[in-house]
Every structure is written in structure tokens, then in C-alpha cells.
Image (cartoon, rainbow, N blue to C red; front, side, top):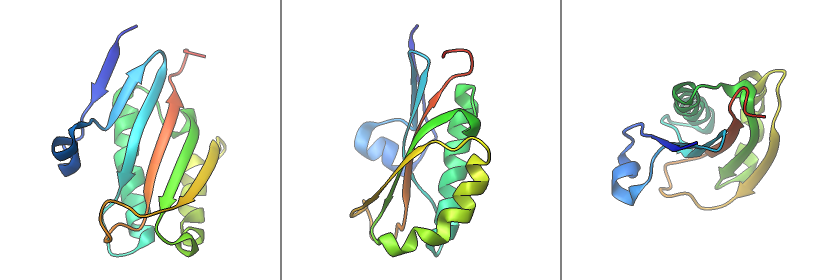
Length: 122
């Protein structure tokens, strides 16, 4: 099995030197995604959209996600995202970690990173 790199064209991919996702050994590793919007819930939805596109390009979906990490500069902003996250993962909840930390720019309120298993790889 080779390695496939998926690029989304995000501004930081070129600046920092990374890609949105890497498919290797049956796994899909999606880099941390921040979203656009004026508040944490808008940014959460937007980040999930970017992640969903990367997963689709890799050949899987949110149903195949096995691990997700949420990073927020203010842990109090996590709870408003719960209904959005519950809807995204529906009946296939992954293991989850939430970390309170600084993000690359203070305008960002949430960053989401996922790992998925390609269908048929397990």
C-alpha cells in the first residue's frame, strides 16, 4: 500500500508545509481543521465540512472515524458544539479527547483532528 496525500488548498498548508489528510496502511489521518465563522458553533460546522470533504476524497465518511481530538482555547465553548458533533457522528461515535490550548490564531475557537479506518481495511 502506498501513501496518498490529500490537499484542500487551505492557506496554512502552503505556509507550514503539510496536507489536509494522509491515507496510509488503511488509515486516514486528517490534520487539525479550523473553521470559518464568527463563533465556535459556526467554526465547528465549517471545520466538520472540511473534514467531511477530506474523508470523502479518501473514500470514507464520518461513520469510519475512530478517533477525534477537539482543541479549544476556552473549554467553556465546547458544550455548545455537542449537538453539532453528535449529529456528525450519529450512531458511530469515535473515541474522543478535548484539549484546552492556544490555537494558531486567536480568531479560531475550535480545531478538530480525526483518524478514520478505510472501509474494508479492518
